[in-house]
Image (cartoon, rainbow, N blue to C red; front, side, top):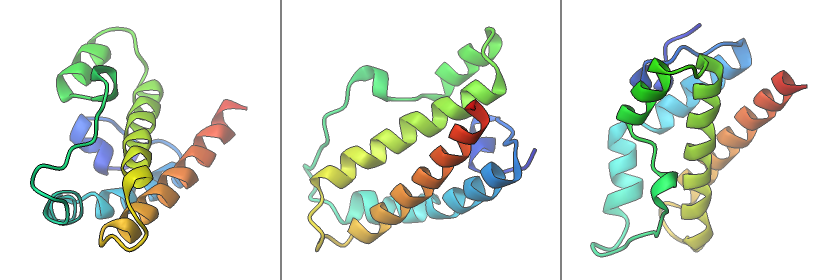
Length: 122
């Protein structure tokens, strides 16, 4: 395993490809960058509608971990919820928006991580 953004949720990353991509995502998802690109560059009253099920809270992770959910399944859940959230944001951003490139880079990293996960599932 390796430390990374998944450590925030108390999860260990597994394979080397997943580990490296997780590290790259951690760099991109640092608080300062999220604040700049996902808050400061947006109008004050700007919101993206999400369903309750689309929000992944640490308390939910704890409850799942205390149940019978495997670490690998929890990592995949984090990936799925996070990548879908980034896609939702990208859908509404014009290409000239100052957050577009940042969001595009996140999408590429999540795409690569999705490819890693599809390898395991075969």
